[in-house]
Image (tube, rainbow, N blue to C red):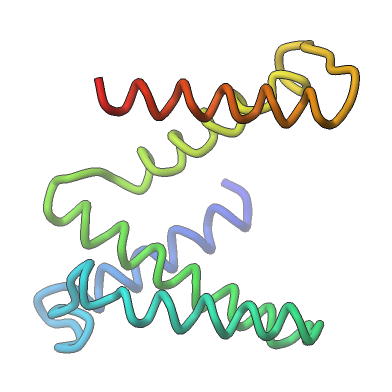
Amino acid sequence: MTQTNQNLQSLLETIRILRGEHGCPWDKKQTALSMVKYLKSECQELTEALEQNQRVGIREELGDLLYIILMLSEIHAGENLFTLDEVINDINEKLIRRHPHVFAGTTYSDEAELTAQWNAIKAEEKKKKYI
């Protein structure tokens, strides 16, 4: 297991302990909806750190945002809706699907053609979601 995997597993375990039977009352009572304000706040703080090129701030805010994302994932997993593994797999598949010029040998003559293909792939994905 890589150091990153170990660190991610450790963070997930910390979140699970915080939400567990003997965990923190605040963490245990959070819902997806209650986390929205924290998600917005952390996104704003990260945006500001990026705009101001604050390396230490960016690192900290990325961590805070990662915590919120993992917390939301744990909340949904606890409701048997989906798992973090499914979230990770879905985004990986989407990135590969939306980049045929990188992963499938497709070529494009210019950026406009690339953008048109990207939009066509997104439109097809959206259509499939509502079938």
